[in-house]
Image 1: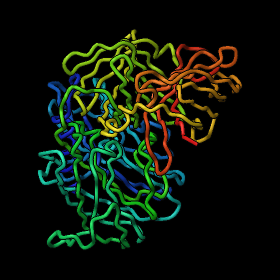
Image 2: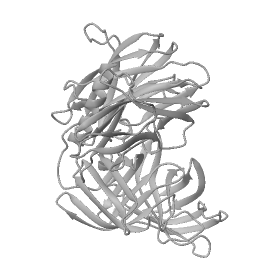
Image 3: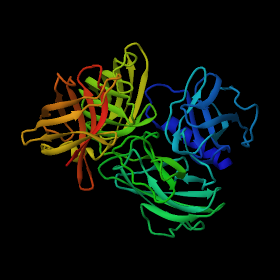
Image 4: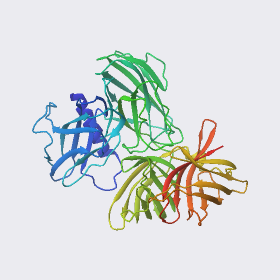
Length: 520
């Protein structure tokens, strides 16, 4: 128990002191273990830490579920020996420069697939930001007992950060895991959800005495994990030689995941969740990572990261085109206007988008950010009235080098996909002219309409990573939509993934939504 709590605090302090900071944050939080497999109507617990890094006391602090997950939740303070103290679900104060440890309990009311449960850590004076893999808990709930694997990672520096000295370097970290649930076959793998092309990961099971691999290194290893059995593993991380890993602990994370079999394939271009819900995740843990980048002046590209605690993709076409969107049916996003870069900082007049619509509560505002060439883009959006705020941070994907400079016209027939279903087809000729028909996603209670599509792909590099414009017949669905996207090759298929953004607000159709164009 002491080891778990110590590492939780190490992870918390790493997040606090090593990440680029836009404004002073006084309340941070973390949990360990980062995942549990629960049984319906039985409490499952994890430890948490809330850290007040400010100079004054924080009052009336509490923890609650941030969403509507099917769990009854409870929290209670613990002492230095991890023993509960005080009364459960009672707000407390945290003195200046002090951490408070907690026991969090989740009791599922029904079976539920794997879900990253977000928590609100709040005091009267501050609320901690949601950081996936740091202060969230990945929970699976079943009607009957399942494996419940509690892993812990150790980095060479013993501070929860895997550091690379150079590009292209291979580093390793060790892990131990105990299964306190039922026996089962388990696929063990290492994943970097926001860094799919920045680092390559392999795992092996190890001899617990000398740490040598018992199996060959591979993307995953299958073991039969007995009840109350402890197993040890090694994770090998090979940093890319054309990209760095930015110092963003919330995004630059390497996960060790224990899946039911078979482990799923992850689609890195779908920003929906850290891990697929099936097969179930029975255990997971993570560490931060840092690797030097190539430097330079280029900021254009694909950035993968987090928007308001949810996975998202940032597309930087230029300082007059910055698009940030989160995954899921309801989209939050940022569509930036003319930007003003200045030596690592960025400001722009911006349109914020909430629930796929330009909303008065979001509307026109401004974006301010810091960035580093071929490394990261991090900042926040604020409405002109001062609220709400969208916080975002994302790591540069070296795939940008393959798609940004593409100068081919995307000739052919393309199926337009929205929410995994085709909503139309367009053809593009050698001149970049677009023709076709599409049923644009409806909004505001309007009926979906089939619309004629015309237009031309953007100039310069034509499509590729550059701007493509779909001009929709104004007598049907209008007004114009702009497609901001990039090439991605998936097996034998070429895909353009990105977002359709409306030129002007109009009731009846969504103002912004994620789309994929799949070449037929």
